[in-house]
Length: 140
Image 1 (spheres, one colour):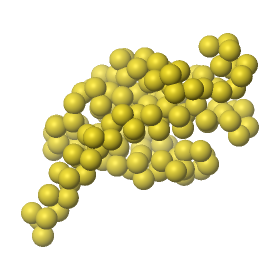
Image 2 (cartoon, rainbow, N blue to C red; image 1 turned 120 degrees about the vertical axis):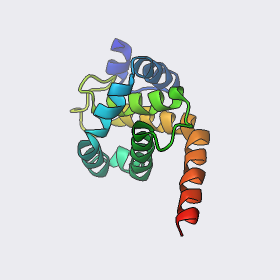
Image 3 (cartoon, rainbow, N blue to C red; image 1 turned 45 degrees about the horizontal axis):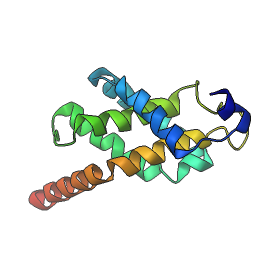
């Protein structure tokens, strides 16, 4: 990890390892706690340039997690839920591969980790979108 701090960079392999480490530790209670930090997450994603491009994804992820917790939608595999939650926990964590207070690049690792989680979860996010769309059609 010292190399990463010295180089102030993170590659996709390191992001994948980090995401896996965080996801492996996620439990149902972590999902609920992450939902409790929705305002903090939205503020962070709105105000940090490298995270802002993921704001709409963040909103969708939070909806998915909320539907998981309430039992409205349980089709997403736990591994996907854990990866998405782990990525959000990582973004909120003050202990990063690149410290967040470093100007410009401090949130770069956060963006790479969240981007990777979204990429890995894409098939499940698409299924979730289809489910939401079908619910809207039925309600109309």
